[in-house]
Length: 107
Image (tube, rainbow, N blue to C red; front, side, top):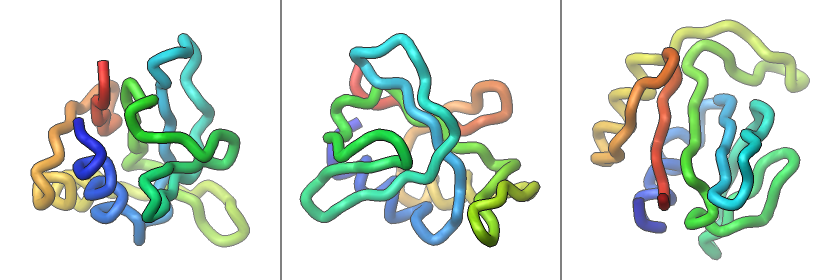
């Protein structure tokens, strides 16, 4: 996925306090569930990583069942339809892996 698509991904989901986790191309570990934001400069940042360029992500997962609520508490939700519709509206390809939305980046 190119940088423009990564920025569109964030634009599609930025108003939802969703949880994300990332698998970077140079690391076997997956990050914890965290917030994600982007900057006009093309960099991304999470609660523990960043800033970094999107080409460093092998994939990103979105949890449609948990979101950050007031004071950072994790709350239950079901955003499957809304997330799917938003990703489709920007033609962002995704897979459903273990009930999570997975967006594959650079491999």
